[in-house]
Length: 136
Image (cartoon, rainbow, N blue to C red; front, side, top):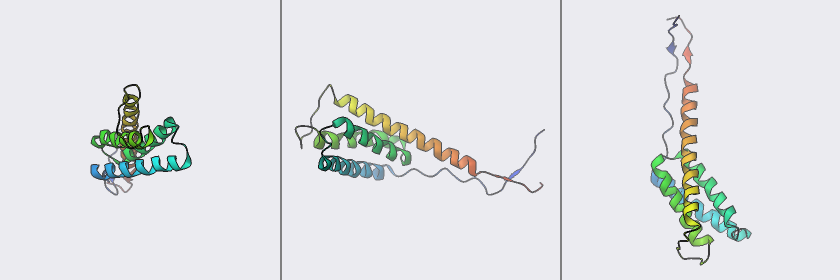
């Protein structure tokens, strides 16, 4: 038997993702600050730790971003790590054995963060829809 109910408060939309330029600005500034912090703390010689921290940043930004922002986020995080975190410092370089893996990890983190953000926001919007319990 089907029971018809009215929706009480109406459907609230899924939160709108942040604009892509805002995500990219946050990615660049956040990556720069994190790499500088790791350098001050003396952990920059461990590039695996720096990569892990930047992957976390990319995933967190992905939660509030759009899918189209993920490649740019990964590229900006990789650029900060490559220029500031590896030798020769201050120069953009390409190490064929290392950099494709780093970029893939950063891109995967940004995409996973974006998927998680979209799922969490959609789930929250679904739970906000409540039936109106007065008779029809």
